[in-house]
Image (tube, rainbow, N blue to C red; front, side, top):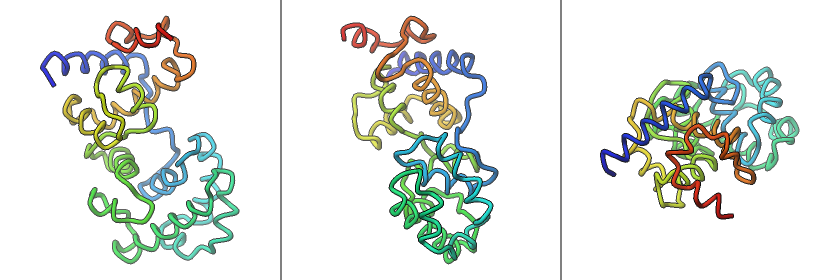
Length: 216
């Protein structure tokens, strides 16, 4: 990646920061445990739906120790509306037990330890590290980040791991967490997959993908 590419990315970041000054993690949480639970629940589910379910989960299971002792059926019923609830309940219980047994009940703040927890991959670990611990260890690559990164010419890859590697070479490390928030906000508000509003896009001039969209 050239100096010109990095300069273009920095300009994109600056414009998006002005456009979305309140960009942040959309999952409601007050600590690392709550964010980890919410992120596991968010798989193939909207953040809005997760935020409707988590208050009751956090009230009944306020920490990893309480969640580890939960009855699977009760937890499944509580999170059923988020979809794939049996798998999610299994992941949540496995994660909670591992946090209690391996880390004394405290969510670890290291990538290696997080990804060893049941139900936790690199994407989830990046969410927790960046937003709960303020550690820029990687860039969250969700569907919005993957799609917009290709449109913006920041990667040619389809695999999230390879996309993240490309982005980490372009985006200054101190902005890794915020970059994902900005791109996700833009993907939800302007660069919408089915109906992109290019005429309203503040980074239109920096987007090679505008020609691809125009040719649809």
